[in-house]
Length: 197
Image (cartoon, rainbow, N blue to C red):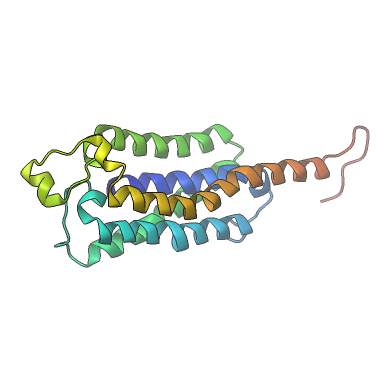
């Protein structure tokens, strides 16, 4: 949904950086490493297009029944751009805190993003679970919450989840293990002289 995706992408960018925090400590540039490239590809190839698809297919639902298809053509363009831009912003801010040695601040970034996202969804749960059209919403046509689970929106989200979930979960599982292995191989044995830089 348009209102939550800005916070969600910010949380994705900052949490991906947090997942690679051990590796990023050694990176001199925030955007010249495989972790940022992965993040950028995920946001631009999967996440942003999924949002544009939902906006085109279900404009009422995707805008929490605030806009219909009669929006200016720039709106989908701006929406797609923010779904990438705010992820990069989250990444860059997290990278800065990682380099400063402030892990608590890194975690607060993505927790803020997810808190805002779920807060908006929580307060707007009736809009999220509404399975009718924007015209029906405006006319006050009632739909049960259970009807949403068999709606076209729910089916589209399910298909998108099958595609997006594995690459979304991958960094959270793989990068911390990689960082831990890296820190074990670069650790100086007790009593040994440190390696020259």
